[in-house]
Image (cartoon, rainbow, N blue to C red):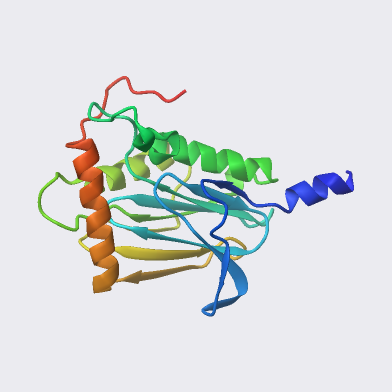
Length: 210
């Protein structure tokens, strides 16, 4: 293999803005990358991936043998009848595409599907009104992963609290913070914006992204 290949392989892959890699005093040995809805990140170098979840779900995956890990943050299982064709309809906002994209990213960097460790978080209901997309997301992601033969070794889904998740791509360690009023407020506002843009979610029986 050429040196150029190794240099390319050193660059973590990210969907979305690439300027969020930063240092944080809580994680002195890792860069921290913050993900927003519709984004994913795959790295073969040690980083901490962080995100804030309300009704959305984050899937963390890692191949411990290859040393490759990643996370996504999706908003809906798949396009529904209320989805517009605007900027919020980016494919990786949907779990059915976001999970496949995450898996393929890990495979690209030397991972194998049958070695993947999976952890899932989110799917909360933070306020009354707007339906319970969190419950839909939570049920859907477990069923989807089961069909793919990927059973989570850790899951924290549903309930009524926001979650800040920090995932170490090199070790698979997850730190989760919940119950913080400021974070809950931000997650509630994000969920309300989401509901205003999409309205009630009704799955399409024939929805496909491929």
